[in-house]
Image (cartoon, rainbow, N blue to C red; front, side, top):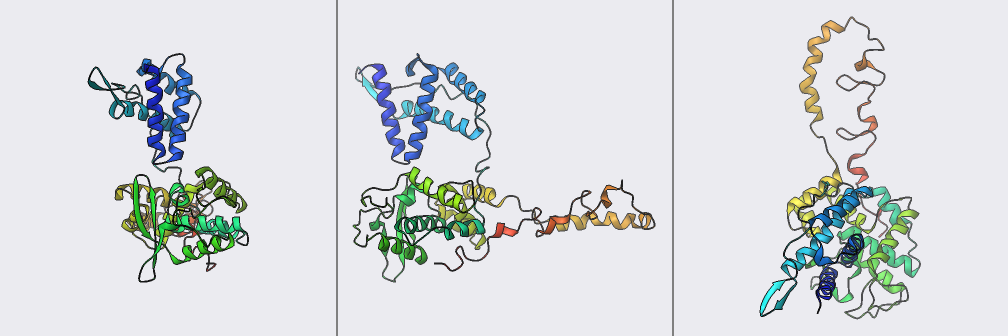
Length: 372
């Protein structure tokens, strides 16, 4: 095997290891590495050093990509070289040696990006509109409703939901149900809410799939065999199509996971319960997730205002006989003492929330208003 053939073989082994965890990740990593190889041609991979890695990073900066996208492409290439150092070895002259001895991307700076900084959940009204706009009278509509409702209620990722098999759904002796999911190197049994089971049963009945085998996937194409799961792209198209029909021009299948977090948070689940639902490795990860979902909640502004209010009483005797002028910004139209001129306190919202917002972005009550 030539050195070039060995590097090409390493790419295939590396991508296969990624695909076992996530097909989407494998495709994204393959795309990034292919772009890098095109950029450095005619150099071969074993001829790449830090100079080429930094030149490509500079090239990506010039494309004005989002910081998260730029970081993802650099991380993909760095991952490949790390794989070649730690995991892809071969024997030469009776000695085992790694394919690569250094990572050219180690010294390339990444952009600082706030984790989940651009993530946001659907509001309760948007989530309800999403479900209400699906025609459950058709096989496809019943499937889409069941799939989306399952993801909203459980917080499962795209890959975890679409790979659900009928043998993964079991009834306990006490009549409650559970399901088994796999994803991101994890596998676990969780409770299956009865409303979710009912919409899945309705879908299977409409599709004439009551006789599912244990290995059959629950969610599949309209006329496809149960042995063929939906692709992650298909699931994204399903979700995005229904979001558009609900008047939401943003979001993807992963938006449903963030929405599940917002729903659980508004329903009163604490961070430990939410972390368990999401199967996060640490509570710190869940805290970041919740912070991005909730935004900043200012719960002490009233106490701070009271602390500062003494300054108003101390100066009251100097101003009570004076008439404010248009130039006095603290008395501008609509303002209140202690607020910047021209601001209206919360503009009809609730204490501690931005103007016009409703606490928890409307997360109160049931998800579907008793529809299921």
